[in-house]
Length: 596
Image (cartoon, rainbow, N blue to C red; front, side, top):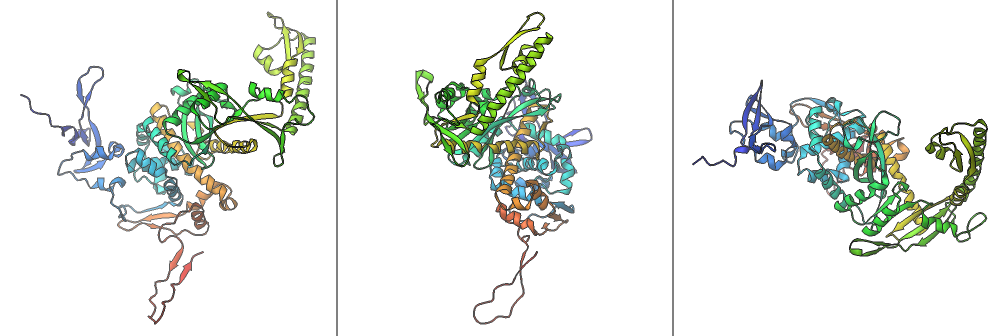
């Protein structure tokens, strides 16, 4: 009879010498998928130097529950484990053995914002209270926002700035960390962010293209570059709350996928992440009858831009007949000088098992800009005259015509006949049907609402709030320097997008406070706020308590605007500690001095 298997053997840590290094390792069993045999592979948790365990990448990235299962030798020095942030006890901690004088103010402000908006607590839940991983993610999210450099320079930056992560984030470690972030983490974060939304939050849905250096990425295989560069691109979709000014959802699609085809996946994701009672706002890129019916089937409150060429919109416009200036049925809004009219829509969709679904509070809002209509009619007449003049010259010269696609684009108001073999122009005539349609629709625009109680002009103003979404993409590609993706593996790209999402939450909040408070008059941009905070330093000397330099001038104003308290003793106030002689009666108030 064989010896019984020790269930703790796979967690027993033993020295493993590899070259000139000694690693603290375990050998858990794995089943080879090809042969089906059990094999034992080494997992290196760190190094052993002079009988002292130095935690490594594998130990940093492990869950606390997995760490607790490890059985170390009794004589091994484990004092380095106690220095990890996840294992530290509450209270003031002694400084390191090194002397440091590092910038801290801008990092400190972003750390306070991370706790204020709840992203720090959400990350702690997503990564099972692994503080090392959370601090590393926050450091990588803060770094490009403050420096504008690539991740190759993070260790150099950590030498001059105090960061949430207290160990060097080398390129190899960053790759390992980003590749450990999976779809499970993304969805867990989405669910936590969904719980923080207010009821009936207005959420704008939009996408942008991002170039990538990683040609092996599946989503970038067919993406076309809009900037004319020899790089492929992906489509990045973000849902942004225009009421809370915060991104709450993201997903990547292939670069060649149109927005109209991605909405079904977005709605499915939002449903799985428990986004309830939100109002989605989408632009013309997501407009189609298919998506409208999808909204009705799901009962999703929404405001969607509607094309005037759509049948239900065109019928209303045709019903106005001929008019001077504006249709008599439409009203005018004094503030915007727009004519408007709202219509109730009855739309029935057949769902599964032949069930009928009706649009709830489904309304069509039609608008007319008379100034834009007048200018548009003039432009149509000028374009027709210009095209006709060019076609006359081509006909006289017996010119060879371009391909059909180019002809339709250049001479869209004309029908052109040409010789099929030589492609020499033979004749042309006006396409009166297309001209009449263009004249009919010019100056009009429309949107469709469902599940919300709003007038036509209220829906117009709510829709225009989605302009904040464009500022989001400008910020992502500008301040965060994320206009290019430099990852080549699918796992790394997933982790990088996750970190970018965290970074955008922080930067969006900074920009919102800057725009909505007195800081807008004091600073030209939101980045200047961080520049103002940067000179605050964290001074650490060996064996001494950390000292943070005082907050003065505009730095205190920034803390007030963000509703955060400076560290104790750094707020620029001082209470005199002079011992006064005791007197009868009420004691005197303490003298308070304020530094300028």
